[in-house]
Length: 175
Image (cartoon, rainbow, N blue to C red; front, side, top):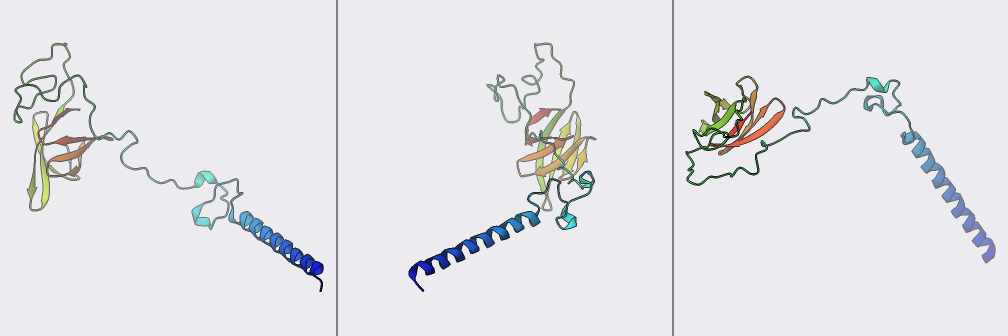
């Protein structure tokens, strides 16, 4: 064989190989469902579903997308006022015993985390809702609508409906 003839045979083999690869790739795309217009159901082996509206939907997480770990506060109200001590927790609207001067009287309930203690290896919290005290642990529901999500040595995460909030020992929030 001459060099020209050998070169033509090699070029033909390469062209045939490329065509074969193209055919195999096209077959894989068509059979994999990549070009399918309807959604496939995971239980039917990848075949097209006859009724896409009959597909099962996962149950959403218990907390909504508006998950909020802490309550928003007034940025103009100081966190610590002069002369306050750790036992002198200011009430809603200012110093203890002081009435707000803007005429606003809150109609919601105050929630205060009084203490967290270890009882036989299980954390328990004392939570004051209004004037009623509750001894609660993780997973407990109290005061009808509140639930304990988690407790650590110095703070707790609670939910009120689907709104989550966090309190540290001694902190108070209005709900």
